[in-house]
Length: 115
Length: 115
Image (cartoon, rainbow over all chains, first blue to last red):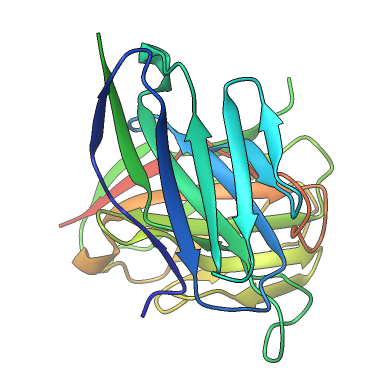
C-alpha cells in the first residue's frame, strides 16, 4: 500500500461547480499535511497547509480527519484557472522517522474545469 | 527575486556520460532536496540536505550523488546515467529544516532524457 494515495482523476467539472477530493495516508503518526498545486509541465507550488481544525482560503477549504487518516480539499465556485493537478503532501512521524525530514507526495489528482 | 534556479532545464544525453544538474537558491534556506517525477509515481525524493555538509538519502538515491558545500547550492550528479533515469527533476528548498512546517519552493524543473 502506498504511504499517500490520491484518486488520479481526471475530475472534469463545469465552471462554477463545487469539487472535492481526498487523500489518504497510511502512517497514523503523520505530522504535517499540505496541498500543492502543479500546472502542466510546471513546478509544484504550495496551495495551503492543512490544520487539525481545518482551514479556509477564499474558495478553498482543507480538512484533516485523523481518525480516518485522510485530508480533503474542497473548491467552491470553480474557475477555469483552477485546472491543474493537486498534490497531497504528508510529513510522516513516529518510530523510524527522524525529525520529520522526509516528505511524501501523493501522485496527484488532475482537475479539469470546462467552460 | 526569491527563487530556486536549476540548470540545465532540458538535456538529452547518452548512457554513461556523467552529468551534473545544478541547483541554486537565493533565499538563505537551510533545507534543500531533489525529487524526480514520473507518470503515475508522483514526486519521489532522491536526496536531501538539512544544512551545509549534511546530506541524506531519500527514497530513490541509487545512481545519484549530491553535495552541499555551500548553503545556496545543491548539485545533483549522475555519474553514469542510464535510461531509467530519464525523468523530470525538481530541486526544492525550505527555510525550515526539517521542512515539516514550512513551504517548499521548487525550481522550474529539469527534463532529462538518457538514450
